[in-house]
Length: 306
Ligand code: NAP
Image: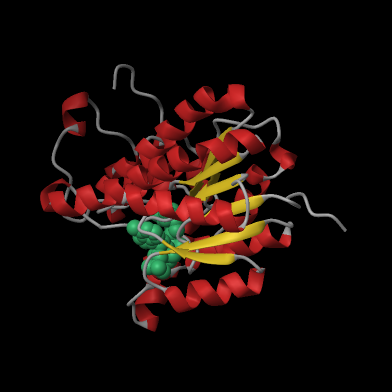
């Protein structure tokens, strides 16, 4: 039976493992010929490429010259790129108090400049094929309340802005540009180097912050990417599809925080909101899973002007 991506060439960056690997498998199962990009894990990338009948291409997406060579090779061996998935990414945990400029610049280079460079180089092929671009952002960009992810979130928020602007710019060429924003997914990025106990503790933490009481698998993100890459989403562009099990700890969704205020109600006036957080923040203010139904029954009243 023909697949929705039959005859399409797909380039998936950062496809040697984790979410990118699952995306490559999903696109291949839908009929695409897949180029598997990697930067270090050559053996894993080659194994995957042979499994999906595609090619493995080494390239650091933060280096424009390497990106140019990668795109040239993909197009000469497989044909013009009709599906581009900008998945390669890195995460360095830091916030304002631990800001590390070199690490932040590295994140910007890979998470923002990488997708931009690959898009620029693949553009002629994408125009010729009236292709689809899917950028892998993060729900951190839209405000999940996890300490240490501030600057990672900034890079992904910029990627979402790029997604929306490029959707507008490229629509006249028939190119759709969308993003997925995964929540906590079990990969090397989140579990690499953790002991089994620490991994279980992380799972349990994130399960307690999901409406569905779940953590995510790479395949959960891959099926969303497949939808956005395929003609099934022909009327969808400039969108961000959040794939996070219904996270409850968004900074701007006050309802989720309501019962965690001391005494169960918000501070009486604005100045109290600006008081420094306690040492135990944010866990003392986050809901536990069993507390959620009560929270939903008693939304926090909106304080005018707050
Ligand atoms: P991962 O397991 O750490 O895998 C990262 C992938 O990116 C690897 O294939 C790696 O290649 C590749 N990569 C890293 N730097 C690269 C560079 N400069 N050039 C080319 N490839 C590079 O990460 P993941 O969890 O699958 O994450 C994939 C994407 O989803 C990232 O953009 C991440 O920010 C995003 N995301 C992840 C989560 C999560 O919870 N896991 C949540 C939200 C968003 P090598 O194997 O060759 O090193």
